[in-house]
Image (cartoon, rainbow, N blue to C red; front, side, top):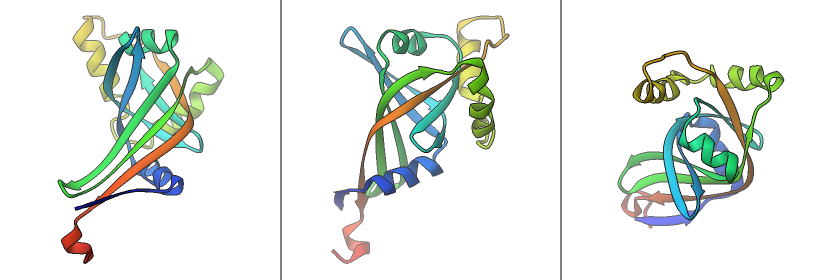
Length: 149
């Protein structure tokens, strides 16, 4: 197996194909990582959520990251990390985010399931946010036997 860095353009392609990633945030030196559905456009990653720990923490520390993987098998995968800043979307920016997210299958499911696990009230107060990407990095693993390396 060979592992090498991928270009920023390749990172963007992985983000454009993805729909589920792991959102990372931190508060008081404590990391928190949770899977989320997302949509990518240009320099932003859009997410639908309900209020909870991740939102509370990102409001206090907007530095976040998102990891997105494409895994074919243990020796063939690509992983991208987007570092950026959390921005809660105002009402007039939400329709654009929703339109992007609706292109993804079950884009709302993680947020609804999380809500159900915390409270009996299934009323969802929609919260849309974006991560403004500040840097991208990625790695690709290839099977040396298949590539002839």
